[in-house]
Amino acid sequence: MPSRYAFPVLGKSSITNGYGAAQVRTAGFKGALPDKNVGLDIGAPEGTPVVAFTDGGVLEAGWAEAGWGYTVLVQAPD
Image (cartoon, rainbow, N blue to C red):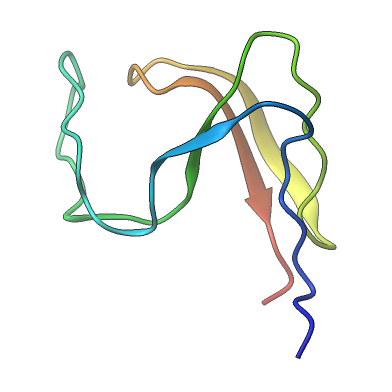
């Protein structure tokens, strides 16, 4: 069965933290950290194109004050 989701980063990239149990605690994060990662963390060189992984909309894009780096939050229809 084909997936309806596409990998959102074009070019050289790597998954730095997967969905599920929190693997990395970010130093300097102000507030409670979740027990699980509710997204997929992808590292890529600056300037790497990012595309939508499915239908939906961008909720937020920019530098995350929590120390997560440049972040794109997408709301999928499901």
